[in-house]
Amino acid sequence: MTTVHVAGPPQMGGLYQECSRCGYVLQNFTGGMIMVPEGQDTEIPTFPEGRRIVISGKAAWVLADDRELEDGETECRPAS
Image 1 (cartoon, rainbow, N blue to C red):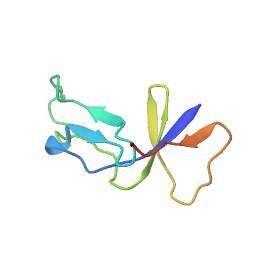
Image 2: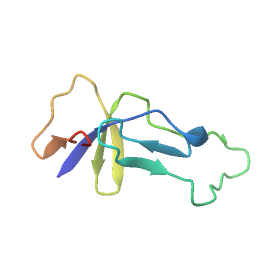
Image 3: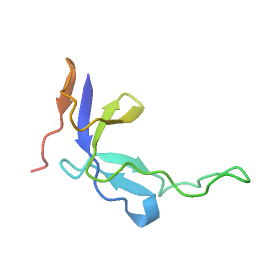
């Protein structure tokens, strides 16, 4: 079973990002140190704001805006 979320704006310089619909935390680097090998880009990658993000176990990826949901994929529910 996979859940589709909508990426909200990155917060705290990209250290924290959540679903704009239900509040699910998409990434949270606020509690630890991020290690970047020397010579690599130090910018923290974030999900594009407003895009649909699929969460399946520990994997996450951006879903094409025009793609229909497949069997086993569900949209998250808005927070109350």
